[in-house]
Amino acid sequence: MAQTIGFIGLGNMGGPMAANLVRAGHAVRGFDLAPASLEAALSEGIAVAGSALEAAEGADVVITMLPAGRHVVEVWTQLAEALPAGTLLIDSSTVDVESARKAHGLAEARGCLSVDAPVSGGTGGAKAGTLTFMAGGMDAAFAQAEPLLKAMGKNVFHCGAAGAGQAAKICNNMILGISMIGVCEAFALGEKLGLSHQALYDVASVSSGQCWSLTTYCPVPGPVPTSPANSGYKPGFAAALMLKDLRLAQAASLAAGAATPLGAEAAQIYGLFEGLGHGGEDFSAIIRMLRGQGGES
Image 1 (cartoon, rainbow, N blue to C red):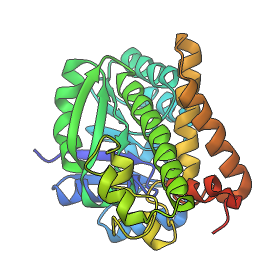
Image 2: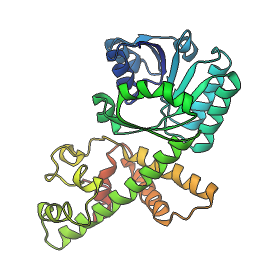
Image 3: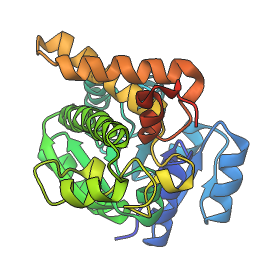
Image 4: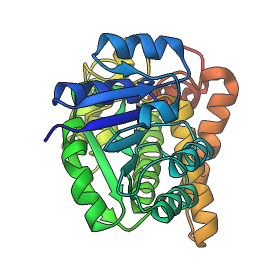
């Protein structure tokens, strides 16, 4: 069933996601602070609003895709003061669990349904409509959100109550950050030992070292032609975003009293990489620093 959707945050992820909702037959009105994002949205059939509240006005559903928890809470505070009860709010940003739960509380106080639904899959997945959504919220809210999430993604999981989607996202990406460092270290060592990239890939991809960071996102050119290593590490998922997620995981770990020593070390390594000026490169480019090249090509 076609719905009217307000979409706030039309950047590298939000823009393509909103465009996929248009292609699914929904009427989408969006807002972003960046003029270039608004121009791109217009070309995709998205109506442009002059503010977040204008984008949300009259919408059955409002979706936000914003940089950080404080932005989500700020926008949802505005929405909670204006939207009618019964409106469904979905946040697909990656934020801290505490902010996600605060946003849910704002929606609940207004009588609105709400879902936190961060994504995995990067800009390529956003454009192709193959994202994975990890959702948290009440069953009734998820039931309403699921068809829209499926219009933007391939895999949709209801992970539990408010904030569970964010919890799943930061745990998943902590695994990813740690595993990428391990794969990069192995290739750097293999180079020193005279082992070709292809030989190491052929063995590890069918052995106990097999993982997504190796077989889908191999950090060296050649073995996986679609990986960013083949295009100068142009980001599918920037190192700065990996650092953000690792730091969110560490904050959650501290709050929960969980031991995550490898997650902490991964955050330190990516923090150093960003500090060297490489936050805009793909996170797999961390291999350059691990080779002792100081992050240089």
